[in-house]
Image (cartoon, rainbow over all chains, first blue to last red; front, side, top):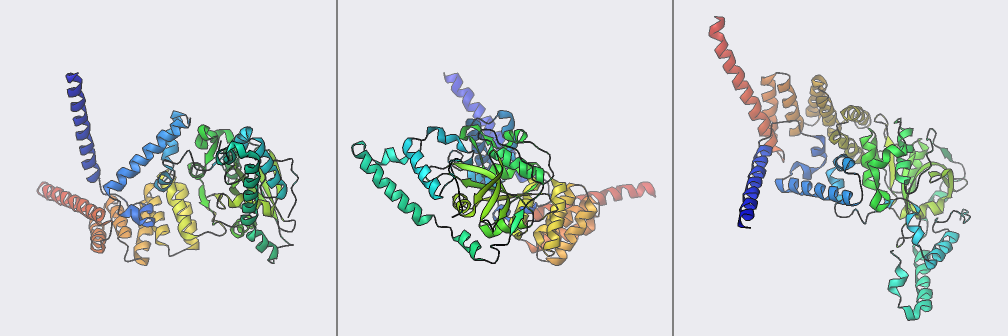
Length: 138
Length: 339
């Protein structure tokens, strides 16, 4: 048991060192063109390391959420990568709650009351759930 | 199940409970479900004359829960990208939600090389885009706020005289929906409407910042060719935009068109002498072209201007100075050999 403890500790020390060196590497990155997004977003311009870490973690979270929602693992990276940082920040932690356009899926479970309410509101022209309710301009 | 009735009402009083909650519900509905925008359109000069039909939008009937991929495929096809709903399913569909998120609809349009622009909420901007021949992908809630039935469709026309909008929706190639009903179902998504445009076409009611943000998002996906066209298009509308000018330079630079990049950054620096970013990017481009003394001059200008990107400007200057030093040494070493 003690051995595993030591092994774990040395592995984690190694990983910490890796992260530190990666951090230094990023800080000493080559001079380069400043992206257009930086002019548009003043927060990106003053982007601190902390902001970068947050963006990284949010991306990781969105990735995990997508996988748990049944997205094919081979599609997930491209999908997360094509979102902007702002979009990632918007949806991280909320993928289960945000509007997801998919149509009539939920209706299979609607009880009689819901059916009647929706029927009534359909007829009154507040909603458009049932195609058999004749719509007319009001 | 998000059915409120069961949770709110104790079973003993179910009938009375349901009756009263229905009453409350209907009161709420009649209170909040007015259609001010439709009323305004009816009252405006537009009413009674205008029939708009957007041409060139193919129809893909949706499979179960696939209104996202179907709507996006219709809009992309209209914009000149040949794609089917099935090809888009792995890009936008979330099996666990049996639907597609708005953010992913936007991202997938960009992945396919098109500018994804979310219109300003409201019927007037929707009608403006349709009038200009641009179909609009919309998200509506066909149910109620507490029992949402989220649905994507493509608006392809209006018949303001007949008080209707025409949609490609679900299994219907031409669903005609009363304007008031459309306004109510659309309002529940906050009037969310998405344009999917080729890069040489601006939204009819383009707003500068949101449009340029939509173009800048293409850089992340490495669609530099499309970004270059879109920035050039934006500059025709807003010739003095710093973002569009630097963006044009950045797209050229990414495409290794250094002359184009240099020209764009020089114009940006001339029009906006206070922009350190324009000078920094100009310096980097000149350095890549091997014109180090000009590059150093531009980089010093950027450092002098400072600002939030100060550290990056200093890095650019330092690197150019190192290269200048290396060049100088090489020349010194070579001189005795030449003599």
